[in-house]
Structure formats: C-alpha cells, structure tokens
Image (cartoon, rainbow, N blue to C red; front, side):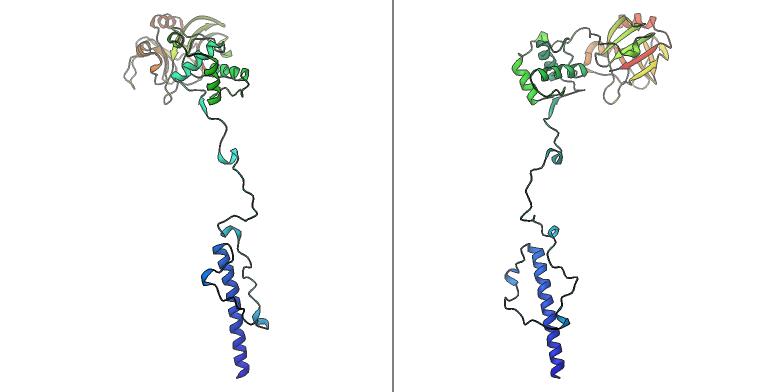
Length: 300
C-alpha cells in the first residue's frame, strides 16, 4: 500500500512539474517577458521527482516563438524605411507630358523669355516642352527629368518674370514641327499631335498647313499610317448629330473635317476622335486637292 502511495505521489509531482514548465512558457508567449505576473505559481520549488516520470514531454516548447510575442527582439536594429519600401519615387511632378493647363502656358512663356522655348505658348505639355524644361534644368544644375517639380518651378520663377497678357496669347497659326519620316514621300496628310497641325505634303514639300484639334481622352484620335478611304463634302454625324462638312475619312469613322465649334471655341473643346480644322477656306482648297487613296499619317 505504501509502495502504491509512493508511486501515485511521484506521478502527481511529475505532472505538477510539467504543468509549471508549460505555464511559464505560455506566459512568456503572452507577455513576452517570461514573468508569471500576479497569478504566478509560488516561488518555492517543488521536490524534484525522480525516475522516468519526471522527464518533460519532448514536444513541449522551450522558448516563446519571437513571431508570436508582438514585439521586436531587443537586439533587432531599427531602420528607417527606404524609398523603395515606402513607394516614393522622388520629387512629385507639378507638370509633365500630356498635361494641358494655364500653368503650362505660363511655364512655356517663362521658358520663352529665357530662350528655351521658341514658339508661342500652347498650354499643352508635349515633347517640345519637355525638351525645353530639360535644357533649363541642366543649365540650372538640376536633374534633367523633363518634368517640372517644385525645385524646377521655383528656380524658373526666380530666373524669369511674370508673363504679360501678350506673352501668354497663343499663336493664331500653330507652327509646324519637323515632319515625321513617313510624310516625306508621296502625297500625305501629315498630322502632328505635338504641334496640332495638319501639313499637306507632296514628295516632302509642304503645300499648305492648318491648325487642328483632336479627340478627347475618352475618344482619342487614332495614331498611325492610314489612307483616305472616302470623301464627303456635306456630311452629318449619325452618332453625335453634328455637321461634318468637308469630311475625308481615314480610320473607321474618324475623318478630317471642318468644325464650327473649333472655329468658335478653339482648344477649349475637343472632337469625338476626328481631326477638326477651323479654317474652312483652307480646308476647302485641300479637300479639292486630296484624292481617295492618299496617305494619312497621325503622329506625335
């Protein structure tokens, strides 16, 4: 009987020892410091059990997993997030390629004062404006990004004066840019989105030119090489219910045609994808000269 009581006593003590070890480990995992807190077991040690029953289970955790503690290791270094970690890509651009605003118009007028922009301001930020900005940035010792950030804008404000009303006025006729290489042979309607011009060219020579405007962001004018598919002197848009006189179709319903809205409002409006011309007299002459099958190039 005494032997049975002794065995039972040893088993109870062994179970208590295992429970105590597991309890400390769990507390360390919850609190992160291994302290048992106000509900800790008494500090007096229990008699050490003997025999095989005293061995703790081999799968019992011996230290709290660091990922469960909710706090960093005391020896872990603290790092400031890098630009890559935060998603930052440098100074924020105030103006860049594709923008169109009165601020862009002022930018161009100020660059023109400094001989970095060689034409009347258009208010549109294209590759010509980007090249002018790059030239200004390099002269000022700034990174030549071609986009206007705060540093570039402040440097430009300091180097130029406020443009007058006359300096901000757009040109009554847009200046042609360098013709696309595809426009240098044959009979071509060479249409530039950069300078907003249409140049009627034959064997590389400009016969006539006129201002144009294009589709909006939602209905853009297609770019590429096309041919004049058909001509209609007096046409009407069945989709938008607007007149389209002197239409020369080149791409699935998109055409070069006269626009009274363009003549009245200028670049405050836009087309539904067609190339609008505001000078009816010039377009009438062009309409009579162009033949079905002539090349059409729409480019930047």
